[in-house]
Amino acid sequence: MKLEIKKGVFFKSLNAIRENKKLLLYIVIIDVLFLAALFVLGQVFNAISRIISMQQIYTLLLLAVFYYLALLFIYSFFKYIVLSFLKSAFGKNKIDFNRIGKFYFLNIIIFVILFLVFFLLSLLAASIKQGIAPYASLLILLLFSVFAYAFVNISHVFFSEGKGLAKSLQLGAKYLGKFSKYYGVYLTIMFAFAIIVLLFGIFGNLLKITLFQDYNSLLKYGDAYTIIFVHAFLIILYLAILFNRYYFYNIAREKLLK
Image (spheres, rainbow, N blue to C red):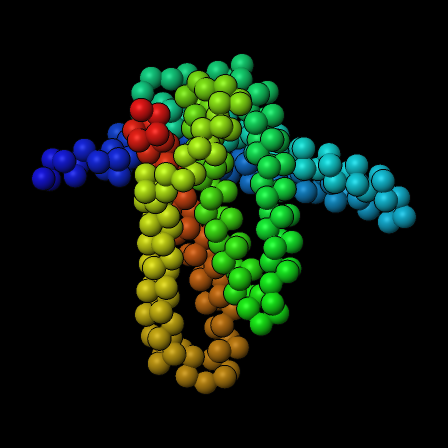
């Protein structure tokens, strides 16, 4: 029984991380570079937008299109590298940039599809009665996020494994209904949130009976607590997402590609 559990996708993903620590470090570095590139992109387009007058509507729209195309290119470039590293974690592979143009085009199509779906869902949410609208909108947004995350990652894995652009999109949509195959990635995210709630629930209660006993103490230490909480939240969530990259890639290989 123990042997069968260790042969499962979850433990295979853990072993892939443990046995390829350098690849894990490279992926983290790529993520840092990705964030840096996003920051530079934002600064460049902010500087350009200040030059353009608000009356130049068509110019602003064109700038917005170029911004999202540049954003998608940066995302595609770094995600392509990450996928190559993930593929190397489960077998022999070398980074080959010959298909990066097609991968960029794949992400443009995915973005358009998700944008249209989100637009239609927004119209649906707007038609719901006012009393339940906030709850219905939240539910719609949650379901959209769950299936958008799956669609993007499944399509990317199939493309990384050599499938064509159209085939990757087709299989990405086809396997959305196979939720029982990949629900584990969402359990990882839920587990991360549970850790955050438990950790800061205990930590917060301890602070209430120690540092935050009066209003002056709250003013003095409240900002520091907020900074610690935000950074810890982001780190724990990032670690869950980082593991899910291996986990989702392995799930797609083990359960969907066969």
